Image (cartoon, rainbow, N blue to C red):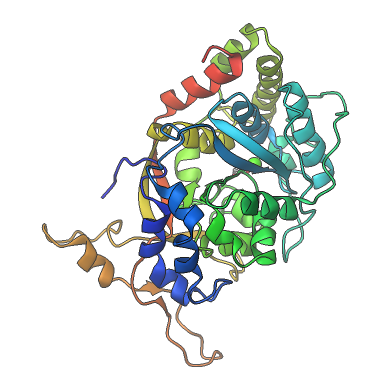
Length: 405
Ligand code: BDR
Ligand code: CA
C-alpha cells in the first residue's frame, strides 16, 4: 500500500520502537539496550515532540551535507545553501564521482559561489572502506562539474577530518542533526564506526542512493551504493531513521534546456553558476548520445527534505548486497505489502508482516549449516521514495537557484 507521507511522519521514539527487532538481531555496533537508552534520553524526548518534516520544523533544521561534487551534487549544494529552512552545520566531501582531490575543491567552489564561506567544509575519505575507488567521470566529466570551469577556491577546508567533524556535530546537538547524504556513504560509516552511540543521536538520514528498480552503474546497483556497499550496509543497519531517495524517483528529474534558460535569465552568481554547470552537463549528455539531460538525483534528495510533499514514501526493510560477483551494491527492499501476490481484502498488515521473514540466499554446500532467515519478521528500517512530483521539484529547484522563490 503506497502512502503519501511526510519524510519525518514519526518521532524517533516511534521509529526506534518499531525497529527494536531489527536492532536486537542486527549484529552491528549498538549495545543490547542501545536503542532504547538513546531514545529515552532527555534530549531525544525534547527533540521528538511535535517534530515533522523541515516544512513544519520550528526554526532551521540542522543538517550536515555529505557529498561528492559532482554535477548534481553541485546544484544540490547550491539549493541547500539558498534554503533558509536549513542550518548547514558542515559540508563533508567524499571520494565518489571524482577523487577527493576534486570533490573537495568543487565543494569549496560552491560555498564561495553561494557566499556561504561561513559553512565549514571538512575533507572526507579518499577511498571506500574496503574497496578501490570507482569514479563516474563518464557522467560528470574529468573535473566533476561536467567540464564547467571555475576559479580555484581560496577558502580552505577545516583541519578536522569529515568523520570526526560529523561525530562532533552530532554529539553537540544530540537528536537534532539530519544527515543529507548525496554521495557514497564512506564518511558516515566511518563516523558511526568510530562512535557506537552516534547512530542513536542522529535525527535522521536522507540519502540519494540505492534503487529498488535496477541500477545505473550495473544492472543491479546505483552508483553511490555501488562505490561503497559496506558503508551503505552499516548505515541501513545502524538504526538511524533512513529515507532513501533512489533511482526509482530520481530517474524522473531530467534537467532540460528550458530549466537552464530560466537559470541563465536570472542575474545572480548562484543561478549563473548553476546554469553553466547545467549547460555543460546537458551538452556532455548529448555528446554521449543521450536524448535527455542529466538527472538531478541529488537535488531531489535535498528538495524532498525541504518539501516532503514532493515525494511519496513507503516502508521497507532495506539491505545491501555486499558479496555478489556482479551485484555488489544492490539494495534489496523487503515489504510484506509490495509483492505481486495479492492478499485477501481485510488481511491485517501486521499479520502480513509477522508472516514475512527477511530471507537471504540459500546456504551453499560448502558453508556451515545455517538458516537463510536473517530476521524473524518484517520490521521497516527505511522509508523509500516511490513517487515523485517532478514539476513541484523543479519549481523549487529552479525557483531557489534563480532567486525567485
Ligand atoms: C548518484 O551518483 C552520482 O553520480 C550522482 O552524483 C548521484 O549522487 C546517482 O546514482
Ligand atoms: Ca552525488
